[in-house]
Image (cartoon, rainbow over all chains, first blue to last red; front, side, top):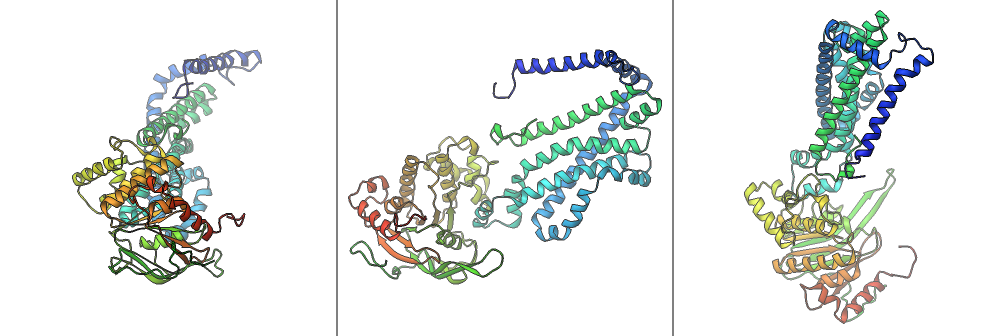
Length: 261
Length: 278
């Protein structure tokens, strides 16, 4: 294997697995007597995808879901970073708030979706809000833990140079949280998609979550498959961009320390 | 235990030099609350040390005898429970400009280039970017790291990283260097080379240094005076003047005939080999 962890033969093998999967998906269910309206094959899903381009405006729905994911992910991350930093530098505040933070963290965030839809109507906002809530926790917890576990000798070193509180934060604590922050962001990137879809399932007539309910209502499983695949695509793009940013930002770490992509 | 072995040792109280000491510890006691809140642990008890300007003093003692505690108080990171630390005659109440410390860990920040790491202290103290850069590059040259300023810490070997840490320590132009086992994580040969470089720099610039070490040969090869501490609660039980030539060349000192005598005496004081418990 070369440095980047894969080479031509592993790529070819991965492609082979995909091909075998598609072939199996296409030909095995009919052999087992499963009708196409229960489990449509890839050819049928592809045909449905092409039909949906004109009839269902599938790209419009994909775009809306993608924007909601992006907005929820960015806002949730920023909020998580901010609260993580504030609690990180104010241990007292963390002690006071920790039971409530824990309770909110344990509560299933997607369960808030109906509430948000009732409050804000069939707009994009309740979907973004669910995504913000669900992204917030892994980011906040990782930032907070990272600030807590900064090597005290680094702090002492900066203090011995008479660093101010702000300098300690800016020069030591904030940069030291970047690694764990990106681990949190990678988790958040995939969770954001879940948050948005649940929001869309609950109410409204826009987004891939709406297409899921549409396919369900029509008994059209192919639409559901198309929506699932496009949602996965959005998740992959969000995750990939985060991993790319991580590589750019954490360039100063030896390669072996990069998280798995 | 405290039998003076003339003419090497001068037992008893450490005589204060005639001039104002660069750093002095006057009757320092430091207690820590025990874990679980039960009682107190006395880390250091009634320790007095005075180090004259330009003097290099080594402090040795068994593990956990409070050597590092003493150093942290010297750096102004926390206050003694009793007694006072003075730097250049004034009482230490917080970190001081004249004092810089260096630990076994290089403490290089992985997100900063080597040059930026060297600049950390002077950046915190508000020196302009151009001035910082000039001083950092000069120090990298002096610490034999020419051309490595733009590298990141992970790209350097352990010895080079420790050289960078030394450059960072010297960058703030301290009068007093507090060195806490600075070379103990390095392999034997790298260690000897770095000891020589340190001795050269300190001798050339007339810096004052307090070196904490476990390495008896290092103590004898680098220091003008070696202080021996007892097990906890740490007290100073012996002072030995090394009186060896080649102050700036510990490699030559290692070969000096009296080295064996000094290290033998230090081994005796620390009861090396008398107990299996280390």
